[in-house]
Length: 127
Image 1 (tube, rainbow, N blue to C red):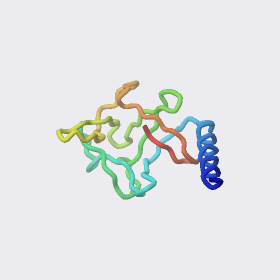
Image 2: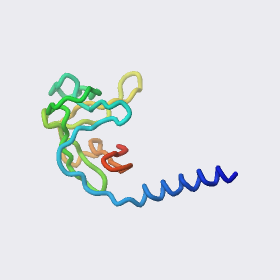
Image 3: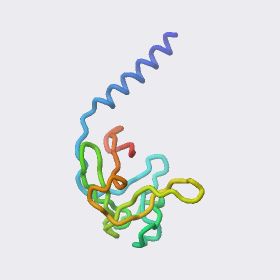
């Protein structure tokens, strides 16, 4: 029982620390890396066509893997690809799966905004 209480206390302390952390505005251009796979987010085949899916790719220093973070409020951002000048938004296909597809950047478009919740230094949960 003591062990369960200690674990619960640690979880609560971690939650309190994370929820009270002061967030800073993200400024600049960055690659978006999946911390589990080490892969970066990019436009498939560096294609400039609307509707092109986003894919995971091994890290390379390419413009198509770099995103300009444009702050829209609190922890919310629109991301503009440096190579295409476009952004992405969720797309549902025939199988009801949801993927991300490239679309023209429309300032303030709600479907193109993502919330970046800080987890640790330089690591975010993206909603």
